[in-house]
Image (cartoon, rainbow, N blue to C red):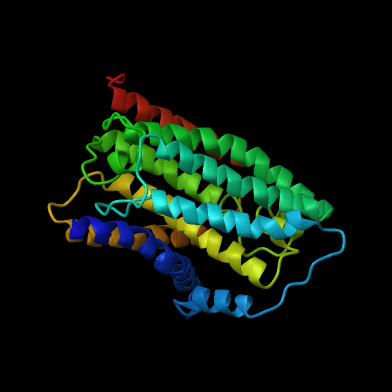
Length: 305
């Protein structure tokens, strides 16, 4: 019972404490490829604390929707952390169908981010919102198919059974789903080659243009929420590439932690060696991810020779 209590507390605690560290690993990796020292590994924590100490300025054209967007989005992501196990460590909330709740919570995050952007009345933020909704319509089916492939062997649409301790997915469909999940993770988290989080040109932005008018604590919530979302997608990708579990819970936790570091290095490497795709090319990339996800599902069901 003590082990269960500790595990259920550790899974969301690790997410809350270590999610900004993942963005620091990405920044350090990009700095390495650029031949620079780069920001400190814990720079994301400093940025969030600095934003929390600042005040917020609201336009007279905005309503309560604009202020509610970052708060509701962060709350939904915190709820997602309660559903996600960390390797063999159990989740705080685990029940049949919690994967669907996870997907719906992510949809809530996107919905409130989009309507908060539209509430400003800015044409640039409206443009970013339309792009976000368009690409999400392509990404969400791929994500669901990947989750179906991962949860197939467990015969349960539950994270604890699908990617937690005891998951028995075969290697080939796990790898196919893993590669598709990497593309989904890059698209969902506004990373290259789908979007450039460091760009300052509104015409090329997707996610960043939707949060241009946010500042102070609101932008801190958005920044921290973005790191949590990246952490959650990274955990799913890690369990796809590491479908086997160690005999010891703590060895499994160490392997999962090492996998998260590798995920950060991989994202930083991808962003260092690739350029941002033209908007018309992004659907083609997502179509390739959809093909991989379908192959993973068919391989898991034994429909492929």
